[in-house]
Length: 227
Image 1 (spheres, helix red, strand yellow):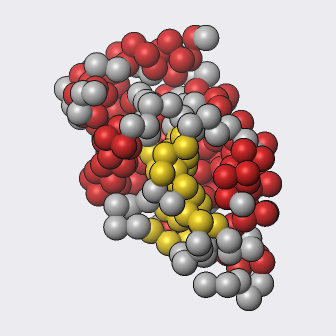
Image 2 (cartoon, one colour; image 1 turned 90 degrees about the horizontal axis):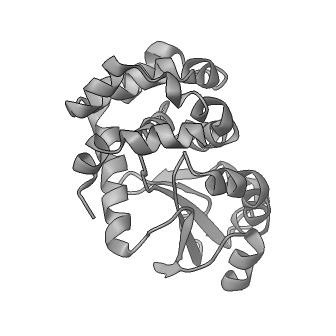
């Protein structure tokens, strides 16, 4: 697999194609508001000492990821995360440059904002993803020149992510500062490269206690592996 930076510079065609087509819990809800950040920059929801550690590799332009967040993740969180039995760590598997933009944007506002931003971006995926045809030649040129922050800021404006993030209390100026944050960019790139080395090939993909699981697509399938 090509290193992510080289891959992104050549990936814009695929983007336009997309547009066409966790300690025992003293109270259950405590863990649903407990967020920690790993040394690699991934966000973890729930009991940090949970006996079962679930990692989800996802892409913000992946329809299956949006479906899992809306229809499967709530049941998993209610059964396992809220009770302290499992934690949920979100790692990026960036598939294209627009995905990169959303992944960096999800980190805006600090760790306490991450899971809300994450849900907002996935729940509105069909809105902003459908506008990738609006990405201008000037913005595309920034990608080709490997000006990734310039590309992400241009994309933010041109596909309408501003109003979506304002619903999260993040102004356009704040969002653009986040998109220019090299540390956030490096964290997202690093997680993607590490996932590729682990053998992650599709999204969403799951690890349980460090072991990559094949063919897990629902909360029920996760639950069967966690019991």
